[in-house]
Length: 402
Image 1 (tube, rainbow, N blue to C red):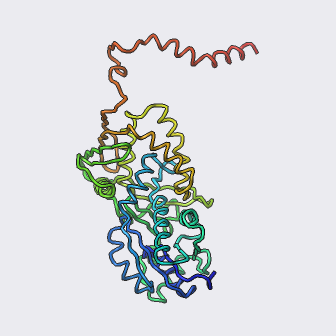
Image 2: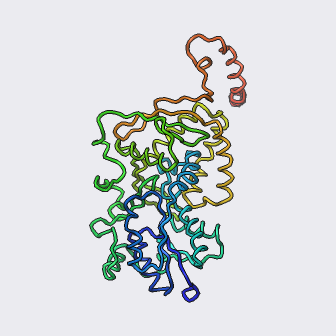
Image 3: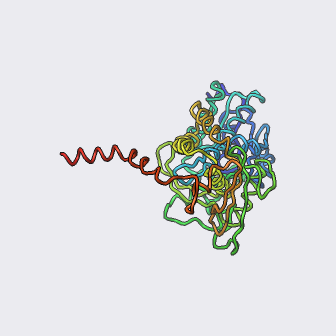
């Protein structure tokens, strides 16, 4: 394929892997390489990325602000599903990859490139997420996965390569873990974190303060929802990206949203990941609170039964698959009446739902009260219980005869 590739669009973050890959692609394929950086809320990480890419040899640099699209069209639909992988991971990296790959394909078309490349390793999930999306959106595009082609075997070797060619990278042998940040979270993996017994160093965390150092007084926050989407924080209406950024700030100062887990990768191995997801943790708790008073029981139970499958599809990279799209339609239909306000209490790493209200609430104090009421005949429960227990009663009688 080396002789046939004319121009490459690289998903470029400016980190260790893609910094080396940018130079390696030029040396190996001897063609122009467009460095594409997606602004998903990394903050200062993008401040000098254009200059760095050009100095490393990029023929062109495209920095695209995708923050609003990311939260509106990817994060919010996923949170309408209450998606969570293996009970802990809020899928911050997983949900970003299909958007990056989608934009990469669009840029390749605009720039007349016939190939795309990424920095995912041959051991990880991201290679699957990127390449499934490439193939779904442009089956003719050539895909270059350097980690599956070159002779480097470790990140230590990459650091040596970068040093030899004067490529500045944000990873050193003293701090060899990698990180990935966007508006939803920041993840850490590799290096010192590969020992699952070792506690992460406090200096590693970026978005959250240590719960021990969080304020000694709790903070209350109210979030308004319309059709399953958050629209306001403490009564202030905000765009999707600004709303999530606000919740990150609030949750971060209270140490909310830290997760340290060993997860099962799609490629078959277990991997340790440490995550900070302050705003996402608040949002999921709030969303479930409003759902609890506005969703029909059977609709909610049906939707909940699909959450593990939906979460796996996102984690494994099948965002643009027909099954995820079909599930999304059912989930979105379930969210039509999820309108209301959730009230949460944040205190030293904890995010506790303490109130919920809605004009569409299905909760009726008249029916639910333990005090006297005039709407519920408790004697009706006798027949209800007898009919539901009938099959068990018959089975017990048959067993007794045996």
